[in-house]
Amino acid sequence: MSLLVFVIRRLLYIVPLLVCAVTVIFFLVHAAPGDPVDYIIGEAGADSEVVARLRAEMGLDQPVLVQLWRYVLQVLSGNLGYSLVSSAPVLDLILERFPATLLLMASQYTLSAIIGVLLGVLAARRPSSPLDTALTFLSLTSFSLPIFWLGQMMILAFGYHLNWFPIQGMSNLREGYTGWRYALDVAHHMVLPVVTLTIFNLGLIMRLTRASMLQVVGQDYVKVAYAKGHSERTVLLRHALRNALLPVVTVVGLEIPGLIAGAVLAETVFAWPGLGRLTFDAINSRDYPLLMGMFIFISFFVIVANLLVDIIYGLLDPRIRYQ
Amino acid sequence: MSMSVPVSTSLPAGPGRRAWRRLRRQKAAVFGMAVTAIFLLTALLAPSLAPYGLLDIGRSFVPPSAAHWLGTDSLGSDVLSNIIYGARTSLIVGVFAMATSSVIGITLGSIAGYFGGWVDDALMRVTELFQILPQFFLAIVIVALFGSSIWNIVLVIGILAWPVTARLIRAEFLTLKRRDFVEAARSLGMSNRDIIVREILPNALPPIIVNGTLQISGAILLETSLAFLGLGDPNVMSWGTMLHNAQEFFNRAWWMAAFPGLALFLATLSLNLIGDALNDALNPKR
Image (cartoon, rainbow over all chains, first blue to last red; front, side, top):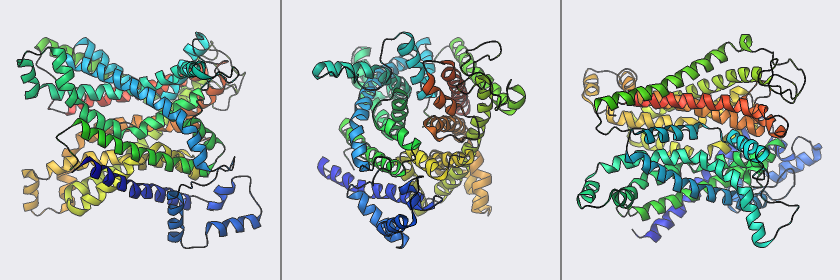
């Protein structure tokens, strides 16, 4: 099957998954105590006329399935509702913050993938050596660390105590930098959150790479590569690693929701103006439409990211050409 | 959030090195078990261990001192006492969330693995859907909508975490159900139910035990993450809530953040170390 057909088929697969996510959220809101209208008007309350009008507008007098159908259509057309706090469209609020989150995620992801794979290969080179033991312990430590606490400790050490890095936000608003000076400023602000997230994700990638390398090095083609007289470095990096990366890609793909959760927590600690901060504010003001919209948006993002992972997988492994 | 990854494979090594390795592994496991034992005792004996009650309020922002070993927080309550009570919350959440997800996961996983066919297909589609939904955000929405009582949180984590257990159990069942002893049981006229519960399940449990310890630490981390975002149960002390409160007072009271987080880190790390050691011990292939 050609790549194009594969991609199109997977793109079509997005719709039912998204509908499922929307359905889940719909029934949750319906099952929640109180009337859906309460979640729209918030805790401030409104007089009975407004409530009645809202109920009619939302079609709450209709059968549940009709309501669900309407809601699904509404979401698929890109309308995620309106924020209780700012009354701006939820999708606009999310899209406005998304680039900041994406910047953080892409940077930490690149870093943790490079360092994690490298350390994983190093650990697998001499299993049970002191280096391997140390790295294994390090990786266990890495995913036992509560990321928000790690972030807080980074702020205490490198922000308050040593005063090396700014502790909050994405740029120094007071200075009003522009151009490359602004980019440098953002980079300076990024250091702590990115390092925090990298430490957090490093362990998983390292551990997977190590386990996967150990399975690969026993195989015939690796022995053949050694027998041909290639250096260890060439064999490990050119022959073994290429194949060892496949399961790593798969699992990291499955872990994307976890990565976003980590990003949200880290952003909250560092007051990074991305989705995390938006979530935090939405929770504390009980902005239900925004929380629901966030869930749907993240679901969509995860589904698309998984599609990309599938495609990368296919490109890496010529044996699996999208059956 | 948590997952089990195969940890070690052994290459040929001399007897001395092997013994040394085992010892070292045991060291990590012993450390894990010791810390977990302290954690358990602290949780069980919280009221008699804590130097101050939850409602004892004194001066705010007292740094670590003889009267308050780990200082006091913004409201003037003792950080050490709060950590001790927080252990109780974490233990309850960890154990009961793990139990909930295990019951659901084992039931659905064994049915899917044993019967196969459309039952298996249907159940696996459901687990796939569950795994693709961003669970952390789902948890946020559910807790925000249904309230943040501790039992709600337990239920939410349990309901979100079962797919991993179900998949593991299913995989075990798929191989085990073709074994001779199952054939024998069937030809003796045992009911499906008895074959599943008495014959296959006991043999399928080892990976579930490893996964169970990881799920406890995962549940503890998820609860504290929710509490950190402001979705903790206001009626109980949680390490996450303590870290949530500390966030505002970084410049004044580093001890408000440092110690609860350290407790949380040690608890999850030791549970993960135990899981790691169990993984090695229960898996004869390694």
